[in-house]
Image (cartoon, rainbow, N blue to C red; front, side, top):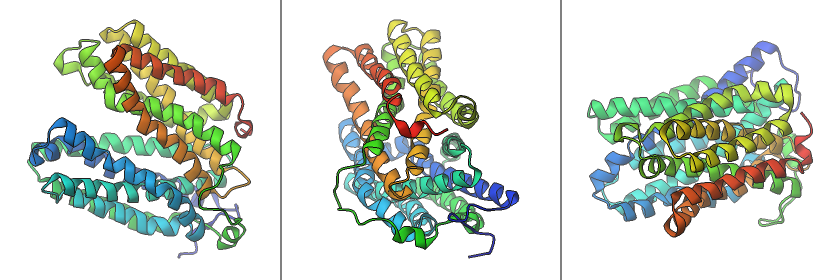
Length: 397
């Protein structure tokens, strides 16, 4: 490893190196986001090519989050044992290889296996990358985590644009993904030497823990806040277009407006969140975010018209933008547990919200209507605001 690679334990680094580290970590976030958005951009083509109906395709898609969830108990331990920079050297290339495997499938069961492996490697990347984000934030001694997640969101737009170009150029899915792999590998090759190195001596101090043990109460509270946010986020990802189509009755050309407005404001919010934290603190920002989520969803419920609903979804995007990065940052700073284990614990609880939010909307919608289901998700925003006031880990700004 070159001499300019940094050691977390020292916390003493020249400013140019700190900036280069921050840039390198941001590009790694971008790389993972580019892989995921590239897959998402070709979902319609893959579904059509495999001749799958909606029900079967929806079942197959569930393989991806299942793989992510099953990897969670192992990711934190691997990152703690070997260091996030070493795990990333394996995890991110594995993630890209799994992406290209998706482009090789010919039948539904092959897609399910490919997505399951994509989920496994994706979770390992997620914990490694967020551990790097926590370490880079420590070098600065001020909030920068949200900007890293903003890089992931920016990659979402980039991947969507590249996907649109590939579709119009009639590039096969596999070769589209190979191009993405070459881009990501180039980014990793250039920036890996500048990632934060974890001091192995700090890992040996990590106490022995049972495979399944009672989670730390503070981490559990942070996880519940993340759960409420990711349930709202998952609902917007999966149901915003349907809401605009069936409830708002938007023209066909504007059905995507709700999702687009949500995504734009979520990305924008992540790039300004660090500044806001430095001004008003983590706790107050998260309380405001909870209010914005509830206000946005309730506005869309009570005023299901094009302009009010678009503005409402923008407000929800701003609300969810800062919560997960801030919660992850607080978890990584927790003194009793290593960052890898802490992030794995919080992300495990949080991710349940992403899994359960969209199906919950579907069940409530079938029983009472889509507007009522969005109102129920709006309650989660209130839960965030109330829960934040009880978490002491958010007091240290």
